[in-house]
Image 1 (tube, rainbow, N blue to C red):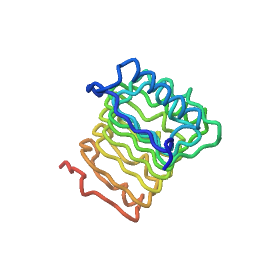
Image 2 (image 1 turned 90 degrees about the vertical axis):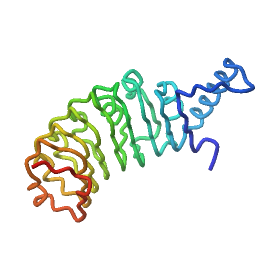
Image 3 (image 1 turned 135 degrees about the vertical axis):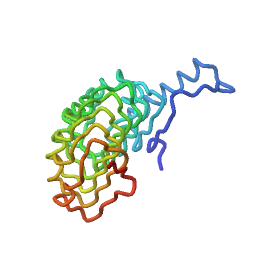
Amino acid sequence: MSFFSRFSVYFGQTSEPEVASEPEVALDENTRLQNIKENGGAEIVELSGNPSFFTIECLFGQNTKKLLISQLSNDSFNHFSSLEISKKPCELEIISMKDCPDISSLKPLQDFCLTQKVSSTILNLEGFPNVFDLESLRGMRTNVLSLRNFPNVSTLEPLRDMRPMILEISDLPNITSFDHISKMRPMRLKLAGKFPKVPNLDVLEVMNPRFLDLNEYVYFS
């Protein structure tokens, strides 16, 4: 594995470096990021703790296969469409975003995928308490779709034309029906968590998944 193949960092670290001073560390870090950018980005970009857009911009590039981000700020996310990749179209192995309470819309993700012609084999979105709709996912293509913890989303209608082979939906307590995704017919389907407003699971007869996982589904009488 080359130096540029993986970059994983947690922003929010409170410990001080033992030898180098803070300006020296900052200079060294910026130089390292610029070197990665000039060499086409990192294959695996794994960031947490409110990473800056500058950091994301330096790490993401034509070499990137996996984009894994958690605790992203709304300000950094709003600049996503500015990310550039020279090789288009581009298919990533995975786009994963988790624990983003500051984000109120997924449109920057949609703009990024459309502008840079990016798709992903796996799309994993988890922990968006202030997102109220999934409209920005309409028309997106992915083989694996995982949506978890969207407490204020009330409908799955924007997903109706998606055709993932594997689908996981967990903890969307405000949706009232799964009927909008009845035509998906994924090979594997997992429903987990609480759906207190969904009266029944009759839609499963239409979807007819080959593998069905309801082990973590919470039933309400």
